[in-house]
Image (tube, rainbow, N blue to C red):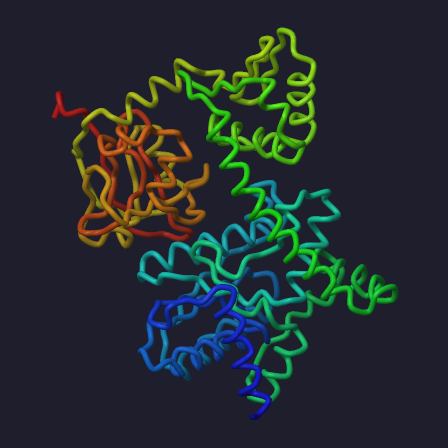
Length: 465
C-alpha cells in the first residue's frame, strides 16, 4: 500500500470510530490554501469517491482577511483547486484590522468570528449539511494546553470533538507531519502563511515556544496531551449522564425556578454538586457560574440558615432545608414567555438591498424583522414548529453562530413540552429553517457580512391584522 493510500485509509478508519458521516452528506470545506486544509479537501474528494453507496456534494469556502499582500493569491489558489476538482468555491473578503479596531476585539477573535459566520451562512444558503475543518492532532494538543493554562475543568480538557453539531474534524487522528507528507506525496500546490511562524498570537507562542520547550521534558508531550483530552472526555460523558440522573431525583420545578432539598443535595459528591449548579444556572437564565460564584453558592448550601445570592439574572436562596434557584426578573420573564404564545401575522413585507449592519439598525429601531433573502428563497412565513426544524443562533450583532434543533432550543429555555406546539416562529417557506420566535415587540434580525438583499417586514398580533 502506498503512503498516500495508507494515510487516506488511516483517516477513514479514525472517523469511522470517532465521528463518521454518511458519504452522501453534503460537505462544505473550510480552506485557507494552506497544507492542512488543501490536504483535507483532497482527502474528502477521495473519501466520497471511494464509497460505493454514492457521494454527496462537496464545496470549498475561503476567507480573505486582508492581513497580508499574498492573501489574494491564496484565494486564487483555493479557486484553482476547486476548479480542478470541479466543485464550487465560495469566497469572502473583509479587512480584519479595521473590523478589530471598530469592534474593540483582537484581530484573532474578530477573524475567527467573521470566518465562522461566513461558513455557517454559506452552508445554510447552499444547503450543505456539515462544515469540515482541518484541525489535526497537534492542534488538539495546543487546544488542551491552552485550556490547562486558563484553569479549565474537565469539560475544557476534552479538547475538540470530531463531530460537533455541524462541524466535522476528520483530521484529529493524524499529525501535522503526516499531513505534510501526504501533501508532498500528492504533489499538491499549497500556500504558506509566514505569520504562522511568528510568535505574535497566543496560539503561535504555544506552538512555536511552549510545546517545543515541553518536548525537552517529554518528547511525546503531544500524544500525552491528546490522551489527557480523551480521558477527560470519557469522564465528562459519565459525569454528564450521572448529573442528569441525579437531577431528576433532586429537582422540583416551581414557578420561575427550581427547588431542591438541601440535605439531599449535600449528600452528592462535590463533582456532581458543581455540575448541578452549572445545570441550574443554565436552565434558569442561560448563564454559566464562574468558579468563584459556584463556591459562594456551595458555601451557602453547606452553612444553611437564611441567605441569598444574586448574579446576572439568577438568584439563589437557602432557607434552612430548601435551596431555590430562580430568575431575578420573574415578571419580565413571565411576560416574555406569554408573548411567545401570542398569534401573529406578517405585514408590510418588502425586499431591500443594502448594507446589513445599517439595515439591522433601522429594523431594530422600527421593530422590524430582517433575514437575508437567500436564506428564504420562497419567502417567509409564521408557523408553529415542525419535525426536523432547526433554528439559527444569532449573536447581538445579527450574525449567525450556528444552528441547533428547535427541540433543544425549547429545552434550553425551559418551555414546557405541552406549550411548545403553540409558539409562533418566523421560518422560511417550504423549509425546516427557523429564524426565531415571531414576537411583535422584538423581531429577529439576521444579517450577512456583505451587501445583500433582505426580506424585511413587521409582525402584528392577529387581532390587529
